[in-house]
Length: 476
Image 1 (spheres, rainbow, N blue to C red):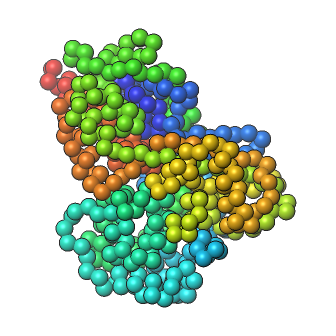
Image 2 (image 1 turned 135 degrees about the vertical axis):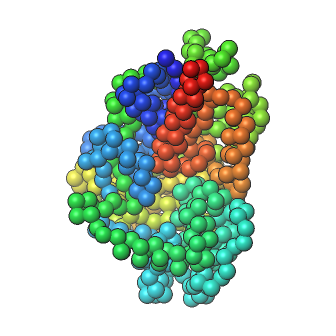
Image 3 (image 1 turned 135 degrees about the horizontal axis):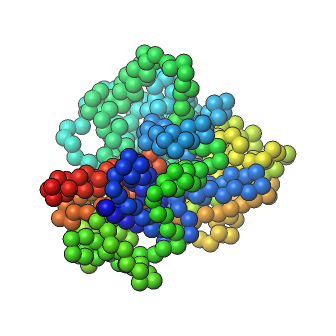
């Protein structure tokens, strides 16, 4: 019987464990142990539920255009628990010029696809609009070299599009500096669109036409762009553990070291216990994986240590609806760096997703820190709460004291995909080939979103399964 140890119980590690559970359920002779240093599984996915409130410590949703998360939910029996965004409140705003300005209708991942809403939008100046329109005639880039998000958007759409849209909307997802952020690794769809259609606008229009020609499935309600679960994303974590009865999940279990032991691997726990395994999957942050690998794979460790992480924080505030100063008529707003504010964005949670609060309350969620303001996210909870409340008073006119204010730190937890990231990961994989049975998975490699991590974890488990099959053939 082959044994696999997964170190790290975030969503990538859990997805790998569930894929192995499927294989065990189909009769494979496998054992799997998941070791998690913290007292709960899920990594950054963690849902707090109290007094009718549903508060996410980490991500609050996942993108539906990448199917891995929805597919996993369905396999886990959570298909009827999936919840989309509110279809009656779809506006998003940009804070600019000391006011909230509506994003023009027809923006597809910040690319305009409707002429009139864009032409009459007060968000951009007329010179800015004219520069964005030049995307229709600018030639496509030659070669396949990586470039920064800032370089790509400047080249295609101009400086104003970068500062008012791309930077707050796209770089905010990664909490990154757009001047160093890899376009190939973060938004490859833009690169592919430029290659195929030359113009981003023409490419997005073609995509819209293609979607309109597809026959709608009468038995299927189309998903919104962002999806969550009725009781929060923690449902997914709980379901993986519940639906994986043959996997041993061990929380509060710290690993001291991993060593090569004869033809297999030995995992040594902090209390001295040893676990021998045929394969080890590191589902830990790159820096922690590098520390484990340094003694026997120094080149891999050196490459992994080049992957940078930054700190962010969120503040979730709930207010009584009665007398609340703002209508919350949309999903929230983003804040361009040029405005000089101390929050990156604010999600109007109770408008975006239903049933996040009890009757008579509203909920907001503010984001702080990232590559350009990391120090703000590393303050203590009280300082962040005070800062966020002042920002909301200035930006939204909210002077009411919240009934609940919860601050969550994500210190050095947000991975940065800098220019050349894909090449770096290719180098890691080539070096790792010298260590059969050793695997890496998680947000540091091929995508930071929940669907990316699920897909990466699943594929990593399948690589281990394939290795065992090949070794069995050689033995036979």
